[in-house]
Length: 64
Ligand SMILES: [Zn+2]
Image (cartoon, rainbow, N blue to C red; front, side, top):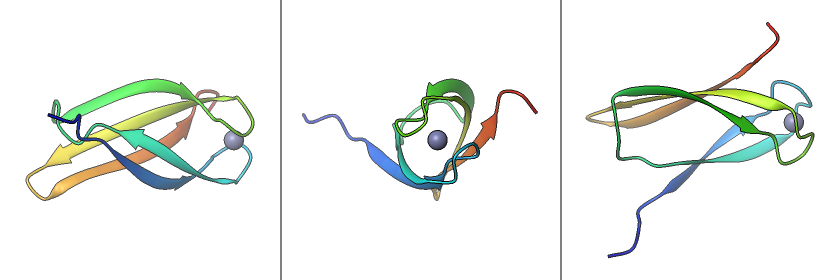
C-alpha cells in the first residue's frame, strides 16, 4: 500500500509565502509539532486537527 498523505496550502506566518504543508490525514485527533518553512527556514508551530470530515492545519509562530 502507498502511504496516504496530503498537503495543505497555507501562508507562512513569517515570510507570507504560500507554502504546502505535508500532512498525514490519518492520525490522532489533534497534534502540534514544529516544522521549518522551506522558504525562510523559520520554525512553524503546526497544529493539525482531524475529524470525520477531514483535517485542518494551522500555522503559528514560535515567538508569539
Ligand atoms: Zn516562511
